[in-house]
Image 1 (cartoon, rainbow, N blue to C red):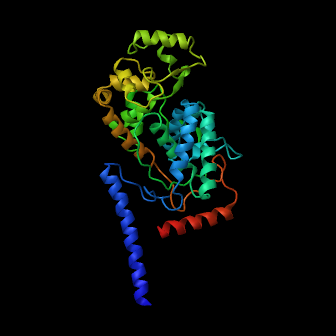
Image 2 (tube, helix red, strand yellow):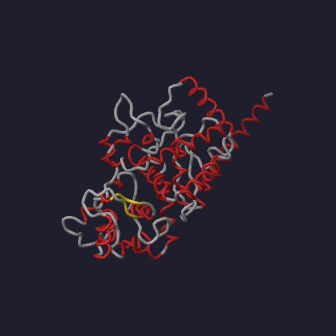
Image 3 (cartoon, rainbow, N blue to C red):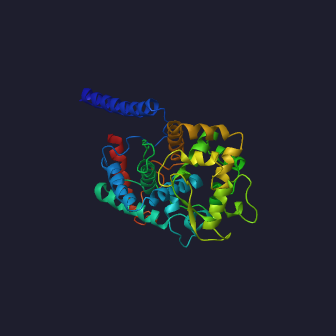
Length: 354
């Protein structure tokens, strides 16, 4: 009996060690950032093996119908992670306790359809696997697939995030999201506090290679005086699309290949055709100019640095283990505490078995 117990214990320890080694190997072999405690490259490998295929197959159809939704999902992940960590708090609706992050000024231009897509993915995943996958994990996977399905690099996403039960205040949102009018000093300073170096900052800015922007995000560069760092022909074209400072129109952020995730954004910057101050100043500032130049000449280099920065960003202040919850609906905090406890217990049992 004692021999059997010792043998079983040894087997469990061996399996656990093997899993930890495999996570380390994946990270080291691909030169990826380390995984924070509580997340794993293989978190749902046994409990929800079809998770990633469910998300990708659905998004293939969504983007085929409207490729613009890819940029919306990528931006949603950014706005979630940078404020109070990747906890899905940006998905929450407001309540009697106060307004939600959705109504904070920087988030008013998030695509409404992006929230619907995440809810749809959550419903499909929970139908297949039960309520064991968080909305924050689904948002991270959707962002990755937004990159891949528009021509960008494929990469692994560490999973195991839990959903936060509180949303950030509007002030916290303003303090943590960098405005398009910011210069490089502000950008580098803000992101340095979150562990990002200049290469990370320039790489993450490359997300602007897909998507659109509202005129009001950059018309201060056009009126009353044109920004001297902006190409004149480009500026005149923008004035046609945005005839006034408060125009409601939108324009493409990357004029060369607006629906393809590539390195043309950096070519735009070199040609003085960056849309935002926070974009164009990356080529003006000596601390980041060479990085922009290298990315414009080497798309593979950009892709590699972007993947590293995205994996780092996707692990900012994550909730894991017994923290937070697994929301039944992404826009609402759970009310069924008893069921949540049962699900949490099942999840812990499954994780322990792995």
